[in-house]
Amino acid sequence: MSRTNIIAGNWKMYKTIAEAIGFAYEFVSGFEDGGREIVICAPFPQLAPLKRALSGSNVKLGAQNMHFEEAGAFTGEISPAMLAEIGVDYCVVGHSERRQYFAETDGTVNLKLKAALRHGIIPIVCVGEVLAERDGGRAFDVVKRQIEGGFAGVSPDDAARLVVAYEPVWAIGTGRTATPEQAEEMCAFIRKTVGEFCGADAADRIRVQYGGSVKPSNATELLSKEDIDGALVGGASLSPKDFKAIIGF
Ligand code: PGA
Image 1 (cartoon, rainbow, N blue to C red):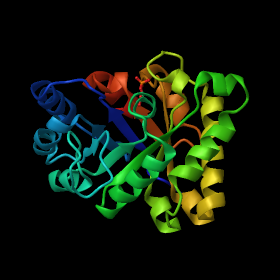
Image 2 (image 1 turned 90 degrees about the horizontal axis):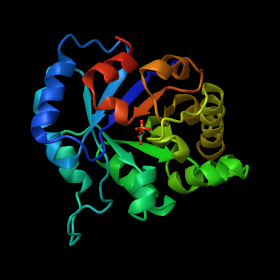
Image 3 (image 1 turned 180 degrees about the vertical axis):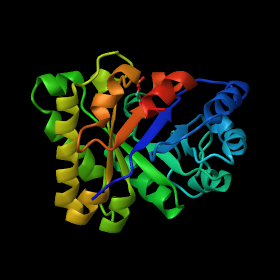
Image 4 (image 1 turned 135 degrees about the vertical axis):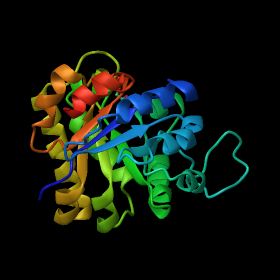
């Protein structure tokens, strides 16, 4: 099965609207996707202006979070329908920073993932172990539990449409990347685990990204691995030059 590579930039809480638009114009000039799907996951206020700035290119738009309810008294939250109205294609769900600072659990990940799918938004579901779990030999158990909890009740067809980002927490923003072998080993394990829960077809079709200190100097080797179908890029996606270099053009 040939899966289309997907490289997503996760801007986190960086860039004003003016900076986002400036990035978009620089980024799309001479843009070629090289057969890869490219996504920019921006903060909420930047999404609608970016949608306009990116129109005419095939760069896709992603949000970084959303609520799982359709509407309601949830002060400060954003619903999936609001994102769908803007034309958001993807939404990061369960990023480790959301799990760590905003009490996200595998249960909320599961609800958000299903809500996104109901609105035609493809979730990029983040999983990954912290350093103590890796050092304690528990990384695979932790990731398996995150997949099991996150994917509960998801149909094989829906699972096949998802993107999973394997992001070892110890590699995020630290400059310490997992080796290509470590990343490949876990991405292959994620595919196998999806197969156990959702069947062989979903395992074959689901795209699994690696994330954590991906930069121009290590992207090519990581992306050459068989079970790594792309990257979720934080810091290096803030610069059009570095992000283009990772995409490979
Ligand atoms: P990083 O972040 O590339 O800056 O390590 C990755 C992420 O958090 O998605």
